[in-house]
Amino acid sequence: MEQAFHALKDLVLENDVVRLRRIAIDDKPGYARIAFDPDIWTYFVSTVTDAASLDTFVEQGIRDTLNGTRIVFTIIDKRSGAVAGSASYGNIAPADRRLEIGWSWLGAPYRGNGTNRAVKSLLLGHAFDALGCERVEFKTDVLNTRARKGLLGIGAKEEGVLRSFNVMPGGRRRDAIYYSILKAEWPAVRAERFHG
Image 1 (tube, rainbow, N blue to C red):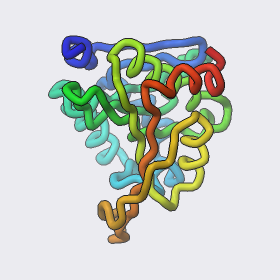
Image 2: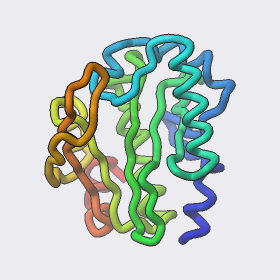
Image 3: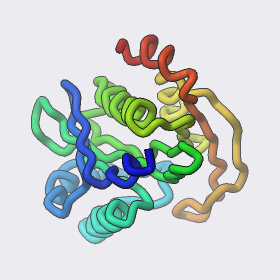
């Protein structure tokens, strides 16, 4: 299992809707077409608002992926071939057989059309079926009602709030709410929420 975790930086996942692959410098133009929408970043600790912050986002994602602290995926919409957004595996703990799925965002054209569910299906399936995870966790801003509803919609269980978790742009202290899916729950979640 440890070996599977170490191979994550070269992972490619795909289904009929999306292809997930390691973030690359060449993705910048694709991200630039969708990432400057301020609605994306309302509940994020960091933001992408211009070319410089996009450079930082992509370059940090590449560094994190290469050193294994976070595996940052570029989401490719298979219908159009365009960059649709990004998602990551993070807080990777092979010894504890757990990881977090997060840092997820989609450009406006890819929201509300099944893209997010297709991404989560791939990431959850790989985490449980290939990596042997016992737990997959998610966290979001307690104020992010859209993400919270989405997490419940994919079968994640709400666990609790970590108050004053981190600082947001502008100085607000964010309360983070955690959700998880456990290995024992995955077969039923997959059948009920992902039709597979």
